[in-house]
Length: 308
Image 1 (tube, one colour):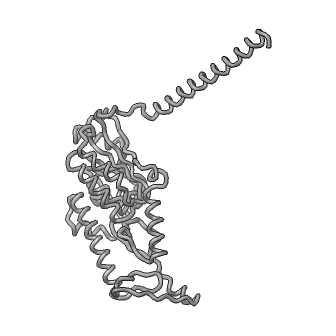
Image 2 (tube, rainbow, N blue to C red; image 1 turned 45 degrees about the vertical axis):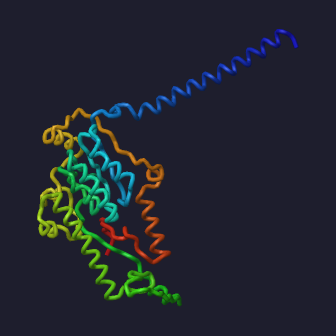
Image 3 (tube, rainbow, N blue to C red; image 1 turned 90 degrees about the horizontal axis):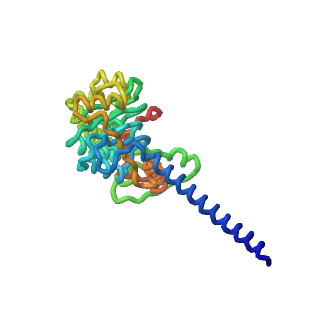
């Protein structure tokens, strides 16, 4: 092989290496730009800011989110909390957990709730610890109440010639059941369970809104209200959105309007992908269909206009 040929091959190898390094450099710059864009305008770690948590969809137990919210009470850099809600409600236990976490923050720093299109049932429950609740005139809210619903297929099974025998340790162990109707005793017990959960909900609203329990019960027959109706009834404080919330925080609580907002994100990849609501609904369906039982989250505070 001639010297000239060797030189040509060496030059080609050098060009390929140079091209590779150029591509790697461009990729690194591009990746850095992608990482930097979402961080633009966000407060530095430890810098003063307004925390914001957005709660959408069906509300169920989300331990990571509850812990993150409760932790804001001890975070000196979080000067206030915005709770943005767009939810028809969800499980009573899930709403209670979020309510208590938000109430813990509200006990030590300003909290404002901002309702979107819907903030009903448990979606309203999680708003009431806030010192200020804002909504749109067309927001659907309220729907204060609890429901416990289970399918009952005995009529269909009888037509199909399918029978079921269940051995139980007591007369209420299989109440409710897919395969036979509720007994009078079972209905009375479950109605008492719903009534107790309802009383807990009423107490949360009465405490948060500084109303008497009787005044809340007069409004809490399960119906939803528009934002304007809710304002007239004292269930919310103001028609508006995040802009108006920041004005209130500045004027009433001294939280500077110039402070940046930091969103509280779920730390769970599964929660971000499927959502806690999706996971819990699948869990409840599986338990109900396969085991004919109710979980502790089987009682729901959910705006359910199609329900009976």
